[in-house]
Image (cartoon, rainbow, N blue to C red; front, side, top):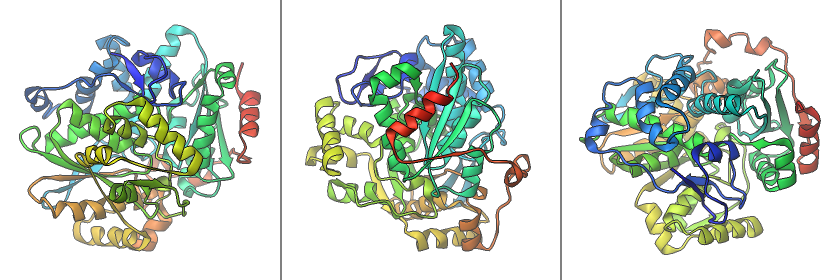
Length: 465
């Protein structure tokens, strides 16, 4: 199994190399050269199996001989053993043929745990046998950072630096990043928005001298391993509602496009997915693009669903790569346009390819709050704002084909956004008992200007030698 860059100029890599590298040296993202497929019988055989067993069946073809079967099973068991629900990703019914996939039972109460916990285990195993040390730098709009810190804190051969937009994450999200006591963890509050953090991360990867000096590695959703781990819960949930004997649709609240792209990979593997619905908040660049062919930045407005406050959706590049029939030069040209002018236009042929798989919708701030309140009244489920965006858009699209089950991804626990949830519902969701003292813990954070040199200086200074 080999991995190639979406921009076509970087050398192909093995799974382990792609996982440890993150961003390709030509600026592109790694994707599998070919996608392994599963037969209908193989998918049907997943029904009734544990999440760990499904994870092994779905992921093992992609990792090839990176780990033995026994090693990989052990890594999966360690990754998901601390989750707060034995099903790991349970389904809850909201309405006739509309289901909520709860992805917030991991250690940091967000869907990022599903990928970060297994990435942490795989990276640790790879580093242990190589004896190398790496510096992980991540950019987060709120949830990736805490999940990365939880996965890598205290490890002997890893330094972790997480950049987040100062003042643009919830208090719970911030405290999950700033209250770690381990010396190898560093929270950096950047004076800017998430796109600024993400841009600086890509600049670091493209500064090859710095990249090689600090042995830079990335765990953002630019890392293929992150996307791969998220493919699993598409299979686990789909077979629970009748796949492969019936089609299933998914609605995904998304900003950086990684979570919904994982659904596309599941479909390429043979899972009978009817529609993948992109759900956006008021920062609706993906929805506007799907309606007009134009991907054009207009500025990010802070919202009550801050993890979706993104304009440069990194993983959309992977979708464009497939839409352009894996033409790296075409993708590279679009990314250059975006960097130089803040926009690009997708050709009619490529747009038609996108529309074969994806639909889209949006929910503004008022609609998000109304959905939190109405869902609580109608089903007893208390949603976080991101999940509410998904539920609103999911209902709208389910009306077009009510016979097909709709699964909406609940991406975070409502307690991560208590102010927004309380304002909408009148209920202030409590943190789980294991996090009850979060507000009492001391914080450790460094505020940094939106400047590449300043960020690199801090990383050079604080990483262990």
